Image (cartoon, rainbow, N blue to C red; front, side, top):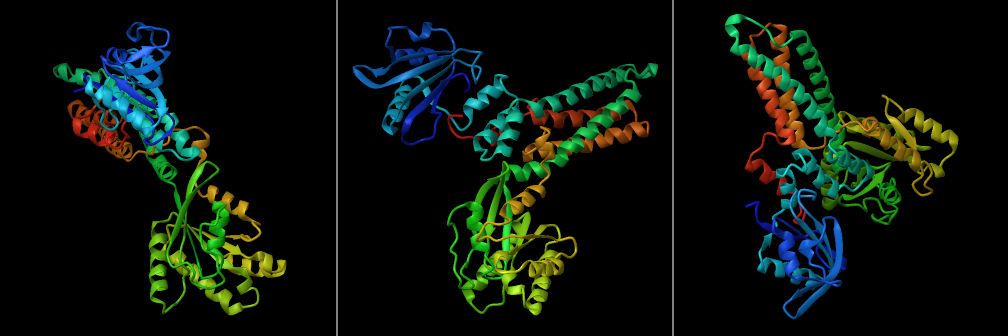
Length: 468
């Protein structure tokens, strides 16, 4: 299956200035040369690797397009095979004409992720690097891009591979001991082995813990904007997004449903959710919106409880009631990061602001004064949002795990290493130690692709776009 020549559009479908069509396989250059006529009369199959040639794609007497053809000869190509990339004009008609031409003459259509799959099978990438290609393509903020680039360069792979190699060396020595069981000798220094296990244990725990950060960076951090009706939730959302995304009105209960949008703050993706105002109501539609509000809080990682300071400045009862409502949200969702945002401070005095802040600033809840209308305090708010996310590892360029498959394999490897550690502490025999070590090695191999199967590869590469 992987010996034939495949073809696909490597750029997004639809019309554009240019499009790139990619061919890969042993016969890619031979096939392309039959339908490419160089401006300078060169034979494409005789040209050097990593060169670009101007000419026309021609079928019989029909000229399809003027193109640039790039040649990459094996093994020095993305896939490790002969690769041809044709840069043509971005007409959908031209794209399809060229692809159909090659499908009629020796190529087949590439499946999703097949170019990268071939790169993996030909040893150009390991499995975690191949998966990072998909993450890189889908990255939509600086942080997710940085993590994908580090993983694609092999940062994560090399860390795992080094640990696996050291563990494999000790495993070999322990296996050797089994061959000399009658002589009762130890080839593996147990003290050094314990030190290695401690080091592996430390690294695995750090990688596992990094998934909490990596997962939110990869998928965006959901932030629910909640509060009573008409406190300025929609205005704040519009300010954060820098566009009129939500309807703003003096009428309470304007937002009947949740509104979501995502922006990047400091390179981290935040997904803001403007929810219906929380209040007692007999309006059926508004009640449904309020129910959805609590569902969105459940899904969010951060809750911004917005308060209208102008309504509280001279109303002690209202201030007391809002304190109770904040406590309700905090008690109902104790695991959520909670920020109390005191809005409309442009309408009150400094003394009134200090009094309200003193009352609300209880139980270590962070209170941030802002005016969404004048944008005062919005920068402080976004800085506080960033501070809630542990990006220290990202700033220090440490390995951060974002892939659920890797996380699962790391957990299983960690479990087996705990067994090895316990076995060393209790003087477990070499044959039983070897079983646990083999299992840990297996899970390490799952990450980088030393251990794999067709079902696993099918699931991974099915999520890629065709042409990559």
